[in-house]
Image 1: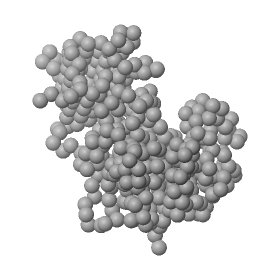
Image 2 (image 1 turned 30 degrees about the vertical axis):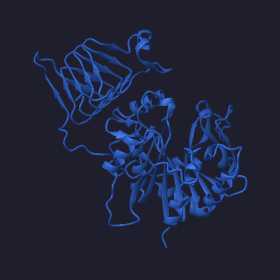
Image 3 (image 1 turned 90 degrees about the vertical axis):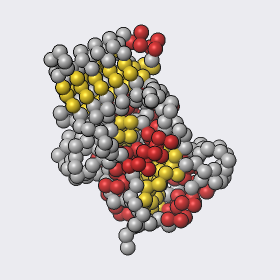
Image 4 (image 1 turned 135 degrees about the horizontal axis):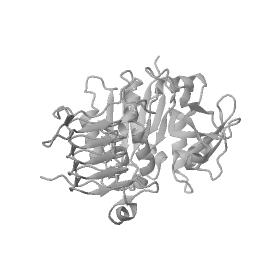
Length: 411
């Protein structure tokens, strides 16, 4: 009998460290890679893994996220157990917002009890990676685990911002610490630590019991990483599943197997986008055997690169350029350009992320900048070349990335 799996995706986070990209939208709805949203990556992993019953739990500033999923992720009504449904915070058990990730699941226990799964896959919505979740489920069943935590090796210097796992030779978790000041390295690998990806498999009865116990506690954040996992590994069979052991069709020979990025800050968001545009990218969007799905905009024409009236050629090099965009006599290098963007003559865009419906005026110079949707850049504007001046007008990240927030679309 096939194991019955229910996916529950945590998409309610404020994403305060991604401000100003999250000032008007949920973190999971932040655009990525030109045509995607962050939530598209976890949803694609579920569908490509053959897991078709998924709830997406939303909370803060969720309207654009809900519309995105309604427009691009509906599977019809022929099979009752095949669905992707957004679930706003309903305050069924308490008149408060979700107090933490564990509380979000606890407040939606009715959905679990209705579906009656054998295993519940609780996954985050703000990571960039590919994973065949079925392989993780096979590992979970083979180990006769109560809980399995997806994990990835990270440089020791980056580990203090993550949940760090210690395991024995059988992958059983023997230690867990959330955001340690001094991360514990992997045995025999002093420069690496094993980090939790924030993705979990739970046997249903184990999860329900632990959530009900956690709900009665006062001294708790009601959070999986901070509260439940650090206690569970001491009394249950909790195993770590290594992402690098996951085999993705079409990526058998890639050097960057096990690619995973936690999109927690502007700088990590920027770097993950930059990872996409090389000839041999660290994360390859062009794998037809494990596609990243999203909402499609069939009414938009293809991108166009043209000579302007003065004979200057529009070009883009080592860049992603999405549909509807016109580069007319401008030059784009090492950048990610969204949909319906117009880049005018003599303008230069370098190492930047330009989102949908942006207009870059003539002679503008844009470098190491993120421009959110609907922004009009005036002629001869220079951004990213004088950070002291940029800080007077825009947000500038610790790594010197300039961010221009979204503008309201013009009538």
